[in-house]
Image (cartoon, rainbow, N blue to C red; front, side, top):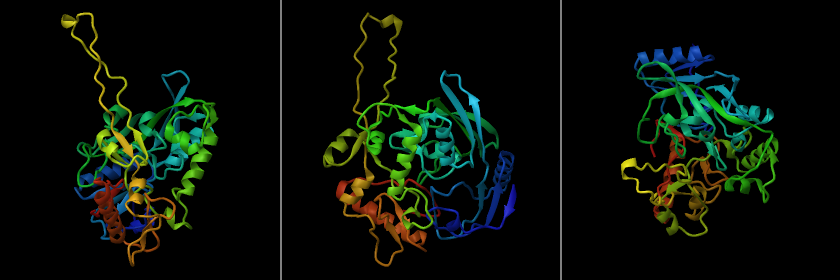
Length: 376
């Protein structure tokens, strides 16, 4: 690891807010990253790790602690125990989209719908990133991480990460601490060896404009997804202020089916799939030859936060008077820095949107990025 002169976080985050921290370290290898974390934890000072800076909303006051920049890179191919599959292990600082591009180029299916998502590999499981109906939890096998409590490095199966909709046990939720304070060093995904695939998910089929079930090339899927994200200002471009954001600032709302029914029928929604592999265990002593009918509960429903925002009267390009922060002109879910906006200005806009949606629909939209020194 090496100490570097602290850089304004506005220069290292895609929302372009944040002052320089008190101290900044940089790690280019896993060994350096482990060393930096252990030293910082031993000093018992505030800290956070910085990868691509695409999921951080940092406040205006200087961070009183250490920021550790994760610059580790590399992809390793590993055998899979499953026929027709391969595993890729990627270092935490490797660009997420670079990993997707590698998989698509080599004919490995399972990540292509997540093309263009900014940030680094290490942040992907923390957020359980996903797009167009595909999530990393579908292919994630395990992560290598280091725990703050012990300083020990271990390999943890994906099943122990508490992966849910844009969450995990590692995520700093707004107003709370993660269930497990740890930093990911590498991830391993298990992918199909197939240069093309049949697209079945409703969201992805809609995004790709598919009306058939014939296989399509992975490269074609990636190209279409990148074009779609670009049209919504979701691909980073220094010349386009609509991309100076954290992507979707608010999560799509997950609500009970009864709540979804009360929303206008035109509100876009998608069922959150129930557990189809649930097992009913019947003690042998009480088995009478009949298997009781399994009770099925109505699944939760994911509803479009972008639709809720627009129907609450917040249009694309909306901004508060004299503010340099605005809703993207291309996508209602992105809050953007139009040039020199403070974190306070972005937070004011976010709170206004939350209040309008709550007043109109009774739902409180939750922020998707990690907030550092900011309150909503």
